[in-house]
Length: 205
Image (cartoon, rainbow, N blue to C red; front, side, top):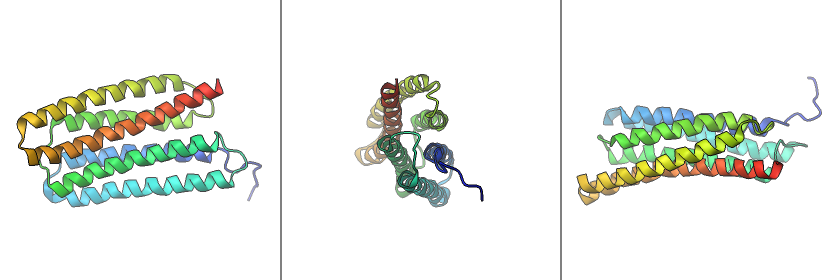
């Protein structure tokens, strides 16, 4: 086996990108849940659990990589924060899917699909951004776009909750509100990822 001087130099960024990809895959499973019958909820919820589990494994792999690498592409604290936030994002997406399955919510608002569209776009942009952290290319545009999408998600969340309050009795409202809160929290975690990237840009400029 050929030895390299810095064998894991870019491993952290590769792991971060793979975590963002798990989030994209998780959004795909969540989309399937929204279009599925209640009989399919348990199977799809378990599939979403698996995406979350893979993300957690990648998070711990990144921690190992940071400890064993001579040179990391970024300061260890930045790598850790990015990894933690990505993992928390998919944990909350997983939580939203689990709530839908537990509550057997068969009719979710179109707002749920709107939020998933935002999350999917955020995750796709983030997966690309993680690969660009070495060169810092186009990361300011990424930061700005994620913030714009996060504001859109906040507006959708407010509209969704107002509609729920008007259309449902308290118990049903509370169940749907739980899902709405989980989804908007995903967008907030990805916004925190972008804010961390912005902080890196400022430090490296």
